[in-house]
Length: 372
Figure 1 (cartoon, rainbow, N blue to C red):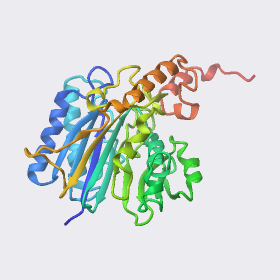
Figure 2 (cartoon, rainbow, N blue to C red):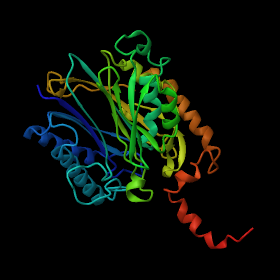
Figure 3 (cartoon, rainbow, N blue to C red):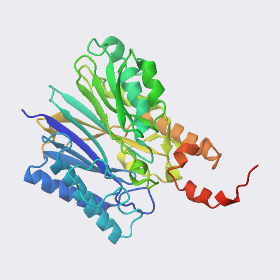
Figure 4 (tube, rainbow, N blue to C red):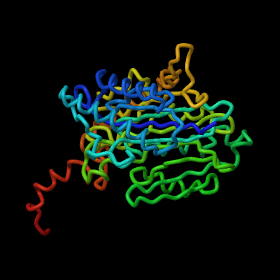
């Protein structure tokens, strides 16, 4: 049987009433385009959803990663949705579409992409995470917890198929370089890098014993493509679970508490990440707090496993009272840090602010500075 590919491709094509949600007309365009692609045999099945103001296309197919036809489908879907957003005068219509002509691969054109090609096991549980109002490095902390922290993942201690550890591919998004570090042997070196999530981003994780792929993330930084602030990157991530990999519950455990990520209002502030259900994936308070959703499903014969009516079976994993304390914690941390207004560390540091609109403000004062 051919390998199965999971592709999650996202784009901010326009939002209703500011930056907080994707309206139904745009979701309907994506639903129609992907339904046509399934009928034509291009993809095996799909699921359309949104995380905040990002339109998310989850597609399962057997055409491999970076396939031109799959990426073109996503590109054309986003283009049509953005055109509809312009017609509706939605906010930031087509914000993530930074280039106008498709060149065979959607990477580097604005939309975020995470893909994973797998040989199906007897049972393959998958989690897709999608975040809004944050940066690609937002997954550094939970991926470390999931695949390298025995206090989070019991399997690292008691599952003989996991005690050999995992390998992390880390991207330097400024230098466009990557390095692979193995844990537990290089745990401290890994933390030294990914503890700076603005520059170093975990892009892939493999099981060390056999190089089985376990996780894939999007690593696009829009500001580095556009040369200026055009919106936050709002990353996506695929995590493979069970049978010698972290359990689904272990992959969700890092989100039992909130933690701070870059982004939030105008991409210029630290904010607490809030795990939410799909119905609550709307960023309102100070354009936030930053949100993350988690969708669980099974891969079955090249598709998302379907019910008796042929609909993909998707579990909204954060729609669970177990994460209510984390939501309250995020809300309280958000209220706490906003009391600092535009003083660091509530606002990002100077280096990060160079890609926001702040330089335009400082430019007005440049000639007024005199030697001290």
